[in-house]
Image (cartoon, rainbow, N blue to C red):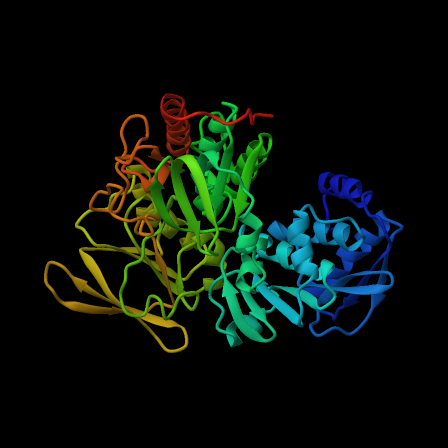
Length: 519
């Protein structure tokens, strides 16, 4: 049996949601992956009378496509979709059967109205928690538009393709045979990149907000909930709901929850926000913020302009880059930032980790179980990671630590083949032969789009007081984009609540609230 009793029981419940008949068209050989695939589709067929199997010759073997009885949907799985991709399979079955995806009607209409032919191929790792987001988004597009198709390709089953295409980061997306994108991408982000994003007209009729939160991560979500609970008109403007939390794997320090992961925590946060009348404007970027008379004006990259009586900036931070030659050129060609997602692609290869803080040491520990050898480079004379992590690192036989190492260049041909660093004590240059470089040197606040009217410190972080207020009246800030000492999820949530309460206090003392908005 491919599925254990618990998973099979859950799957049988999901398969009861099928609204129409499905045909799984299977292309298999005699290899082990083909045998696993055959067992999987046989089990699916045995659990639902709506599912039948047809053996065909597809582009890749082993693979199978999910189709309506009278129409090909364009959804194909090349490799066995277990691990994080099992949910992608379940959703593909349900949606291909006729059940509508849980997306806004405006998003569905945009997909249906897309013209042209789009064949997507996504290379994934089954241990990657970001990959299913892309796979599920492209599968939805395939279900809704007959001119769109998508194939998920499991890298482990198609290692030759991975090597041939120099894929060293997942998810990697190809469109009509050409590399098109990489990394986690939400559905609306994909549509925007394809030129089918929301335009300014969709924002033209929005009334001014009482509180407009810019940023949808832990701080932004918390701020929106606290504001909406006050019964005031609240909006969230964000490029991606969940923020950097989505890139976090295991979370063990979110008090009262012993263990979770970033995508689950972000989903719970999004669900909590949805319990209130918060206008969530996703996949939108702000490019200008300015106080004008009685309102704060926020201009979006698509040209739309929003007004609000107060604003809370919760734009978070992103991975800091080392800014050396080769880093950008070899991004996803050996230069990576997520060891959990991309680590399996470097199995048996030598890699380097840059950064000796908790993130760097944790990355080196994780990678050591997969790769041939890990070399950790730290710029200073000591590692900054917790002692328990350093002890674990030092106990591993395939890990080396080089201190006082200043990385000066990442080298390669089509992919990374080395790294150059300078010993800061001797000023001697050294070459390190590696096939992957994982950059783990901290965070950079997303505040460069703001002008100098809002006070920042030397690191670009927004200066806030104990109410979360900036130096500009009516503008507050929270989370990793501020000068708070510690960058932690739980601290960001607390600062979001503080900023919302501060904004509400400011508003009731200085402006007139609109009608009640709480649910």
